[in-house]
Image (tube, rainbow, N blue to C red):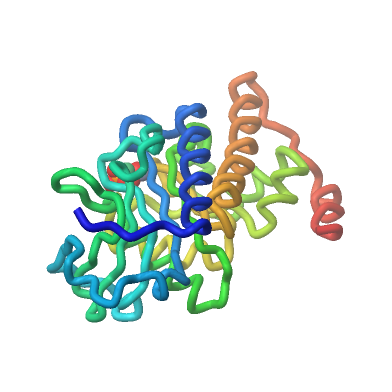
Length: 266
Ligand code: 13P
Ligand code: ZN
C-alpha cells in the first residue's frame, strides 16, 4: 500500500496522540473502541507527491465544500485507542479530494475496510469552524469520561447548561481557571450524526469542553495534550461534585466572590 513519509511535526503529533490514548485507557474512558482523536494537518500539502492517484481512495462522500484539499490525522472507526501503539493500523492520514467528494488515505489505515472514526463529521466541522474563526486549536479529542457522563444523566442538572458549567467551576479553583470558557452540555443526539456535529460546532465556539449528554465529551486544543487537559480538568469537577452527592450532601461550592477573584487574575 502506498504511503507518504512522515515529517517530524507529524511524528510528534502521533507520539502525543499515543500518549493521550494511553491516558484515556488508564482512566477507563476508552472502553473497546470508545473515543476518537483527530488533528488538522495544515501544512502537509508541500510534502505530497505530484500525483496522489495511486493512494487508496474512498469516494461517495459529501463533505462540506470548504474541506476540499485539507488533510487530517484521524483514528479509525472501531479501533481501540489503547492500540495506538501501532498507529499505522489504527489511525490514518487522509486528504479530502478537490471536490470534497471523498478522500485519499496517504498513510496508515493498514487493514481491510479501514475507515476514519464514525464521528469524523463532527471532527471535520469543528476543524473547519476553528479555521474559519482563526483559532489555532488543531487537535480534537472525543472520549467517554465517566463522571461527566454520569452528571449529564442527572435529572435536574442536565436541564440547565449554565448551571452545568457553574456546578463544575465551583468545585475547585483549577476547574474555574483551566476551563475559563466553561463546560457546556449538548443535548443528546445520535452518535456520528450531522445534528451532533452542528451542535458541537456551536458549543465549542465559546466553551472549552462540550459534554455530549449521556455519551461523552469533546474538546479542541493546540495539541492533543491540551485538548485532553480540558476534559480531564472538567471531569475532576464532576468527580468532586458526585462524591459530595454520594456522601449525602450538596456541595457548598466556591462562592461567587471566590470565583470572580479567580476570573480576575486569568
Ligand atoms: P468510533 O469507533 O467510530 O471512533 O466511535 C467511537 C465513539 O466513541 C463514538 O462516539
Ligand atoms: Zn463516543
